[in-house]
Amino acid sequence: MPFARFETVPEAEILGQAILAVTQSINYEMYRHLFEAGLKAYGFDTTIDPEKWYPLQMLLNIYKSFYDEPNASSNLVAVGMKVIEASPFPPEVDSVQKAVETLNYIYTVYVRNYEPGTEYEIKVISPDEIQIVDHTHFPHDLIYGYMFAIAKRFAPKGKHIIVTREYLNPENPDADGAIYYFKTK
Picture 1 (cartoon, rainbow, N blue to C red):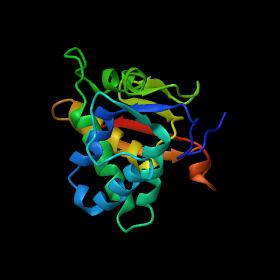
Picture 2: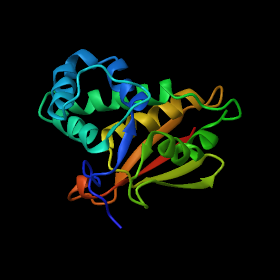
Picture 3: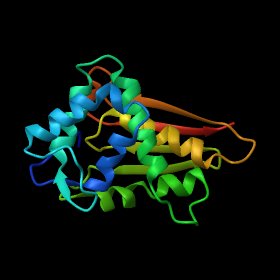
């Protein structure tokens, strides 16, 4: 079932700790005004409490506002990379495959009250190729940042991982998810 980007049920929430990555991205100053305006529109001040739950729709609206400015794609990729860099993976997660297999668990730690079916489908095609189908509501560029950071963080020594993306609905990418491929070279 397709789920549109940037839209979720009203009761869906995201933990403040996950939102903090937005403020820790290398590009934060480029979109700080959008982030702070989005928080204020929902009645929050600009200080994020890592232990508090916030409306997921608020964060999705903030991400959507990025597209009103230049560099939206690179800003969202940078945020996605920061989310993965800041995520504490268990010590046993020491490969790309193990890292992507934790994506749904990480999603349930940071997001609650979301619709069933808005997660990731993970398929190991071969030892050198993994496919992830993204059904979340997050922007594609943010998810690409997650995938790129996983490849960078967990690539085997001496190997290069190529991450590619294919939209499930190429005519209207935001109407549905995307498939991400990890190929080890």
